[in-house]
Length: 321
DNA sequence: CTCCTGTGAC
DNA sequence: GTCACAGGAG
Image 1 (cartoon, rainbow, N blue to C red):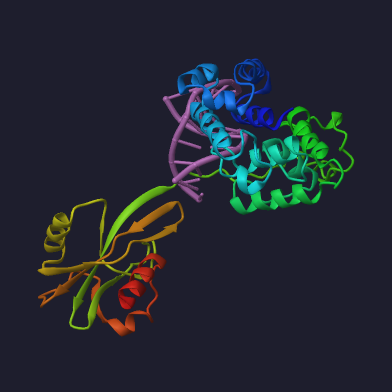
Image 2 (cartoon, rainbow, N blue to C red; image 1 turned 135 degrees about the horizontal axis):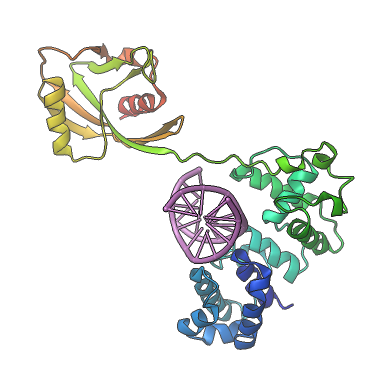
């Protein structure tokens, strides 16, 4: 296997089962036997060879990558992490696969198969959907590699995951069944741990900072409310235009406020909500009455009050600016 | 982190 | 018709 053919096959295998890839791979290698041949082809010819495989941007990435190889690397695939990274469509897994299988270097290539095998073998309970966990698996997968022929183990882990340590593991057939910690504990089906992400609700809010002399208007969240006991600025909910906010201010608070400036946006989240805050500052010349639950508080005393985290960020950025 | 891409299982 | 998958990109 030339480095180029490893690259092509790994990219094809990113999205498709091997059984489907094989005929495509064979045709591809006949039509574009090396990076130069691929680089010289038109995009249409390239896509034509890919037709039916789906994820066409990956064919375009191969094409673009081949051109880069011809321009910058004498038509050969480079053999370092740093150079390979420059090719689009080569992420952490494919990088490791190329270093390992094409250049026989000691490099981890962690795909979904490897993840199942390692998480079960070592009974690793961390959530694999997290980036930090992925990094830990990368390190672990590297650390267990021998110095001699490391690519054999890299391939073995992938192969074991593909054939035996599947989603539903076939432990009775597994050569590692005695060494496997999760199997010994009878909980192999609990791995890998993946916290299913509940789809979060995005909210846009416009906190309104009303300055009156050296006071700011705040309100205390009532009992039974979310954020109960915490203070917050009055805010307008939803995407909107500045003019609508002015009207909202008049209708809601019964006072005339002059727009002063916007503050940098802040993000914060609670439970399933992800809130982006677009705070803006107004000045008040005078006021007659305040809506219920609202009070003016001296600006220097505000930091002593408990605020919800998003509004605290807004407060701090207001003080800093 | 979140989003994107097509597919195939439900 | 909805969701999980699997890897990459932003």
